Image 1 (cartoon, helix red, strand yellow):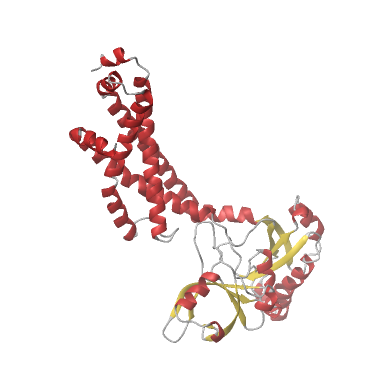
Image 2 (cartoon, helix red, strand yellow; image 1 turned 180 degrees about the vertical axis):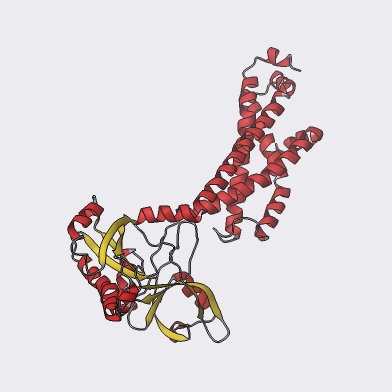
Length: 413
């Protein structure tokens, strides 16, 4: 059967030559589109490792006062200790499960502090995000400890201990770091109190290197800079119904402390949405996906149309086969098998081209690691999509021809 199909393809090599060139070009373009969509889709729908469901940012305002007219004691009380008092009072609000605070560390707010951590005197890890937070921060955002770790965040993030993200810990170990020797930054060595499970910074990154450093009550109290310490709360799902209105009604007076006052209660989903709009990553990806979908649609029409036209031109051959006794089923089968075999033979050059593009890392490596499994999955999906297009392009005209009576079919011959 295969030998017979190869003979048919060879006998029509002139016509098939142009079709082979078209399939080769389309195959490579389609593979690139599918690989890109697969990479973006995998990272976008992958588990975050932390969540913002039922999480709110408690935005606090500070009355404007001429700082030159304030003595240090007044500033100390209003900025630092007032915030600490506010945190304690928020914990008493009905429905609040956890309260966390961070010093320029809240996610989705644009607050970023990056540093370099030292493995030893000559090896370091760069672009590590520093988060100076209370242990309640890890509970609010539902971070999970790595398997085998202690589950008490307060115990892990205590004293001079720090907590590393799984991504940072892997890189630290790959560069020769040992957990029992601690980690250094800013000329100070800290012990590693714990490691989180894998998580991602946002919906468009595959991993992150974060270091959590304890933010103590004393440090909050001593902070005299307005707006630097921010508060987030996790609410019990059963209480998360019109919670912002309830919280304002319940806590507005209690949170009017010296110059401090309650400004707003913002769902973290709104903060994430605003952040994604500001950094433009989401809109850029949406534009890229729209272009890819347009190309995919045109490829779909082009391949189906090409094989439809090719099948229509071979009505005489199909009529002769019917007259010689071919069944309708076998006629459609041999035409479809020929198209799929043609695709299979032509797929060898695209295999080499696509593999070279893959190993050259010319596709979206930021979203998904370059692996053989990724290439194999992308190539297989491309092949199957092309096969479906070819089958659709052949089936209908072949089906129409197979319904003709032998005498009518011979007229085309």
